[in-house]
Every structure is written in C-alpha cells, then in structure tokens.
Image (cartoon, rainbow, N blue to C red; front, side, top):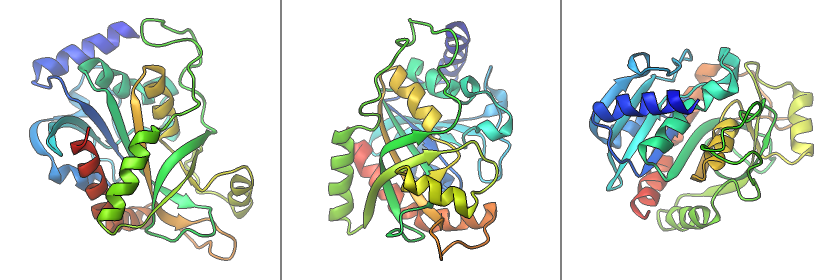
Amino acid sequence: MLEKINETAGFLRQKGIIDPEAGVILGTGLGGLTTHIKTIREIDYKDIPNFPVSTVEGHAGKLIFGEFGGKKIVAMKGRFHFYEGYQPEQIVFPIRVMKYLGIKYLFLSNASGGVNPDFHIGDIMIIRDHINLIPNPLIGRNDDRIGPRFPDMSHPYDLNLIEKAEKIASRNNITVRKGVYLGTTGPTFETPAEYKYFRIIGADAVGMSTVTEVIAARHMGLTVFGVSIISDLGVEGKIEYITHEMVQREAEKAEGKMTTIMTELISEL
C-alpha cells in the first residue's frame, strides 16, 4: 500500500501540490466551498494514478490545491463511498495520500439525516463522536510504517478544534449543534424503524460516509474536525419521502454558514 501512496503523492508533487497544511473533504451538495479557494492546481480524479473515480451526482471528482483561510490546502470536491462498490481501503486511499503530501489536519463535511428530535433541516452539526456501521478500513494486514495495528479512538474529533468552531459560530451568529454521526453503507435511505434504532443507540445524525475516512486519518495521527448539514429528518412524525436531489438542495442552502466556520477555523491553525 505504501508504495502506491508514494507513487500517487509523487505524481501530485510533480503537478505542483507542495506542502499543504490541511485536507478538506466535501460531501453531497457542499462542493461550492471550493469557489472560495484561491486555486493553484485542479486535477480530475481520473487523471491521478491509483485514485478511485466519483460516480455520485453532487460529487464533482476533482482534487483542488490552493489557498483557503490564508493556508495552503488540498480539497476533495467529491468523495468515495462503500455503496459505489469500492472497498474501504480504496475509500480512504486519498486521505493517506494527503497525509504523505504533508497535511496535519483533516476537515470533513457531509449531508446527513437528523434523528435527534431537536434538530431541524438546515442545522449545522459539529461532529463530536461517531458510530461506524461500515466495514473498517483497517481490516487486513497492517503496515506499521503508516500507523499502529490498534489505533486509539478515544478522541476521534479534536476537542480543541470543536471549541474553536463553537466560538467562531457564536461570533458570526451561526447556530450550531453538536452530536454523534452514524455511518451506514447505503445506498438506501433509512426505514422508520432504522431511524428509531439509530437514535436509541446514541446517534444524532446518520449518513453514508465520513466514518471510514476519520478512522484512516486517526490511524495516521491526523487531527480531525467534522461537520454535518442536516438535510432531512428521520424523526417519528417528521419523516417524509426523500431523494438524493432533495438532500443536495438542502445542503447547498446551508453551505455558506459552513464555509464561514471552515474558513475562520483553518485560518486559526
């Protein structure tokens, strides 16, 4: 695995992606944040050796390098999912490459369904913890050069960054929630019974991404911050028919507030 990581990282360095401080992964309907990046390089996933290719609407499939919040970052405009047919180690391969390009921080966003009855569509939830129901990307032989066999997950999301994000939201009059994100394989949206079960076991929001990426990031010692935009509700009495297009629209509506938080947070690194 390390050989492929180094091959891909070397290719990207030759393309001018040098010493980014942070990586950013943008979920469904949230790619507009990239318009705020002062772009230096933009490369299609299909042109990057060993990279998977996005197959989902709302995931553009571009790697963008540039300045954001006064820092050099590398951003994934579109991520990969287990339901696309990719194996967990393929899903997290770009995170490993970003680590070997030099990032120390990973920022993630997603659109998710709220199962906390206090949540509303359009809410921004800072992820404080997660529940993983997707096959773990670390299953299989471990390469000790990349990370330990049994990585600690007592603080998957950085408490210092969470505190800073809350202060940024407060001074910008942005209401934020904090909660537990639950990752499922998808691609089906959840049944009412599943929503109820996820709430019972401690989730505040549910989606089809993020958790595998965070596991890989922590395996390599990266500092992680994650945020969910509540695009629909899985609360009894509030569950309605939903489509992927509806999720995209609701995520796009709240994107500006998320961008404000991310910009100021990255600028304070």
